[in-house]
Length: 59
Image 1 (cartoon, rainbow, N blue to C red):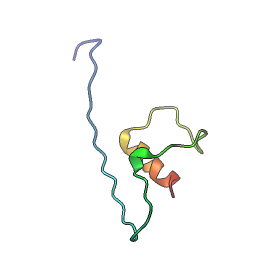
Image 2 (cartoon, rainbow, N blue to C red; image 1 turned 135 degrees about the horizontal axis):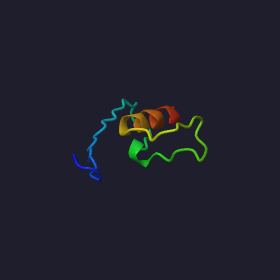
Image 3 (spheres, rainbow, N blue to C red; image 1 turned 45 degrees about the vertical axis):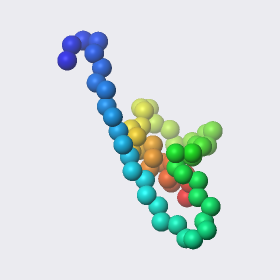
């Protein structure tokens, strides 16, 4: 790889849930994170980490 080139990564994270009948579920793709997260990191989280944290925030 030459200087100035970027590696392009494609990620696909699968999130599955089990819900009781008639449960009003909002898909994780529509999750709105809190304006002030409980914890911040000095780096950007990868897609898996972002989905994991969103799952925890949603209870």
